[in-house]
Image 1 (tube, chains in turn blue, purple):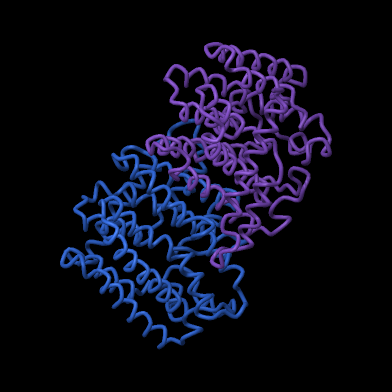
Image 2: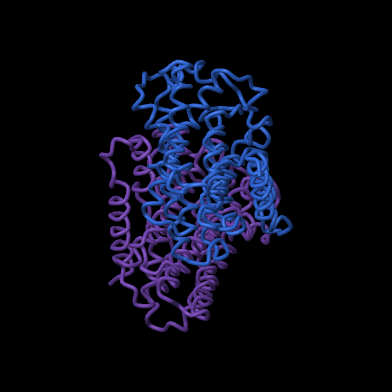
Length: 297
Length: 297
């Protein structure tokens, strides 16, 4: 199967699962209908579903079928979607546009957006706690611990705080790298590690996959910075040129466009080297590394 | 031991555990120091720690020592503290004062308050995922599932949404009861159930404790409504008279002061009846029911 078809197939499967999950109790009178609607708006509004793809493909290295990785993949996507909803809030990055549509606080209101983000984050852990996500409760508990660490104060939320604090403050590559590692890197790394956990990977295999994930996580951010500098809002479905406008230090402001592109290439090579132990089995993850280095939205 | 001394002893134990947890990596350069500070401000700023008390005392019914219930109790308190931080935000209830101090968004700023709430919520699940919280991963996974359900779209977050939507809209006792059951009842019920889970309670024992929790949860809300109508800000450490000011339907506006007090008394009796199967062992939970019905802050 071509990589783009594979990405699309997984995207559909994840979308359908999220739709099942979030539509489940639509008719119950005790559910806050407006909150459920905002959660669906936030979680079903498009997106590449790249993190779920990583969960599914890392699990597939160990012959875990898609159906058995899907709930974990959906949980990771709920956390990603929550982070977008909260990051877009007026008090944070103040964005009106996301994936080509009004952001949640624009389509609904701020209170609803805060609660929808809170509820999506909470729902991710509800999914991971469910017996149907994985038969072994020890795996479920480890997934919970990993997702919480990747998303919390020492992961994604901490990275967003550092990123807000860094606005207008000169940063070196160590500082920018630290923010990236927390803000976007930690959840990408967890996505790959979650697949490894579902597949019962050995410590050495988990380490190789972590090296892979770290390289593509950083590449993902550099590609994002390049898109912010180069692309139009129509191409990426959100505001661009924001980093320069906010005087924000990025890999592009630090290395220049060609330096950033060079770094992107070398990270792609690192990612592929890390996959060596898995041989031909790892083709989809290899292609994902190419995809990250060359993405246009 | 007198009830107030017992409550105070548990309060101190929980406070100390939270302090350990949230101070843990204070020195790490990759931690967002401002975020950690806001989390400590939110989680260590006083409070009765009533939900942790319920976890610890419900577990004690099954001879679980305090030390083995403490981490679960701390996790529940993190969720409670996160909910206060987000509920106080300008886009939500817009409160400047909490436990006699400026609310988190006043002491820091809105972005930091949103992130501190997010991070406390996430941290609750990190605690529950840890092997040291309980040796059996099946119990940990069940605690995660229960806490997520109690806190999410079909629990506390859903209740907050319904409560915001209900402002200025006439409500009957069924509507108010539904909001209460989600907004405050679900987490109180989970607190008691978490203790039962830690103690390996039977299905019948869990049901008795759920009946108890439902009664005190509703009593807790009615007492809150009475305090909002009667007390001064100095007595309760937050703004009062807000419900009437916002034209908000409460148990007091519905039943009147004496009707609400009567309901409080009958719920106290229901709670104590539900504890019958546990005999003398349940004295602390009985006293907790009296405490809820008679609280002055």
